Length: 105
Image (tube, rainbow, N blue to C red; front, side, top):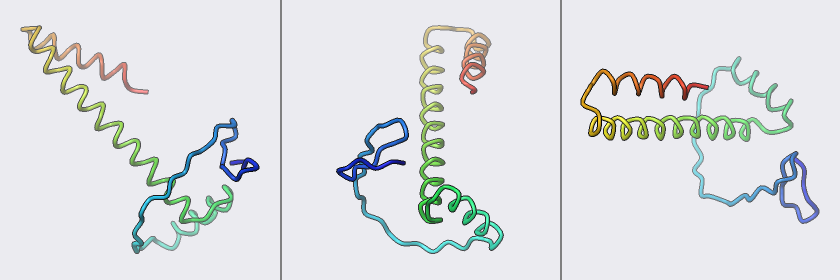
């Protein structure tokens, strides 16, 4: 990540990152020694602290989980609407199966 003259962080693509401070709370996490060694190596290679790397991993994982929850809700609503318009349970099931197959990256 590069820095602009005014100290606003920017991405490699030149997009300004708007960082907003948020309240935080310290916690203690017991991590196996060998895992911590790997984390330190990865963090060093990325020129960041282990704490920053863990926050990055947690943030990415949360985004993935939230996206999955959102997709699941959309599928549930889709199923509900399809059932209102299509009488065949088999047809609804086939449509939902096709949607799931198309949605998998």
